[in-house]
Length: 166
Figure (cartoon, rainbow, N blue to C red):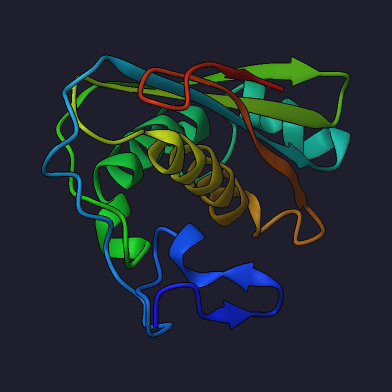
């Protein structure tokens, strides 16, 4: 069964699929611990009036960015509960930061760091995504037209695959 072809890809090459084509969790038992870090970004576009209220902490639900930051950190820690084949890992650090771009855009930068056997890309991506979703949730009463966009991995380092920079 090893070497079975599916849509032009050798099944043996896919880490989350066994030789029979069934989903599997990657076995990282024999991998060594290394420092791993990943940075992901997301953006949320909104009406200028909405961003002005967020900046001034003028929304009825409270400090949007503080809640969004905590939501992103909590989400990173919950990644294995959200993404089925992700390993639970010990996160040494998660941070979420915000940059205002123009009068209608917030760029969210999330980073995750671990000293484990598997990468933290998904944790950073989940943190950025959930931070953006939290901003939407807290602002939707005044701006349902907000757009979450450009969720992507910016960089990662550590592990066998080495360094990636967008």
